[in-house]
Length: 326
Ligand code: CUA
Image (cartoon, rainbow, N blue to C red; front, side):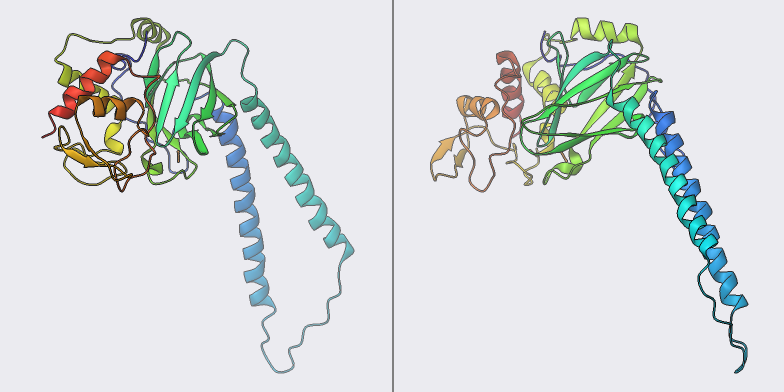
């Protein structure tokens, strides 16, 4: 079962969750610990800010030189005061260290019964591969109330996996695996952001995280939910949206990271080696599956390769859709 076209028919239609003034809504079992640490650090800072600034203002007023002869006596150092302001902060930062350490340990080690999902980051696309082979681009569907472990790697540069509502963030690095886990506590839709600057499309490198009830998750995973009984161009439109091709390819002729698809079919295109190629079915097929085989003049060979992820009938559907972009 590969790449269901119609993504999850599951989950509630709740809007993206709104956060509080300080923090986004907390929707994972790790979140309370992180928020706790954040609150402690913040209130310690607020306390010392008020103490230091308040004392400063008070001394400015108290020791203001009010007349010619108003000279304050020379104050030497105070050992007691110096010991106090060395030891107290030491105790405070050690306490903060243990608060942070506890949270870090909790987030670093996934429970042994975690459900594993393979995550691939590449410019500028997130892809999720489930244990049964289901491939879901730009949409991470996870069950509520079950620990889920992400095993992550990048195909090109460093990206970073960040879901604010879950309070988790970890770099996704080429040539090695990193992992992170979470257990979502509430069904709904959240946003996965790339939080490591990775080039032109970085700010668009988003994915939807959909937390669904365990039953609905099981159904989605088993069915894959692909509907092949639609007109190819219509199905192609769905695939185009699902794989977020529009991030780099406009349909209105405007220039983005990649060439626009408007009027592309059967047009003569000049490649970066000077050759002119007709954009027929074979060219489109090759450009989708092995995008760096021929690169249009003036563009970079940055498109992901789809030879391992798209099936023939899905490529057919995409080509049918591209043909319609007149
Ligand atoms: Cu990927 Cu920023």
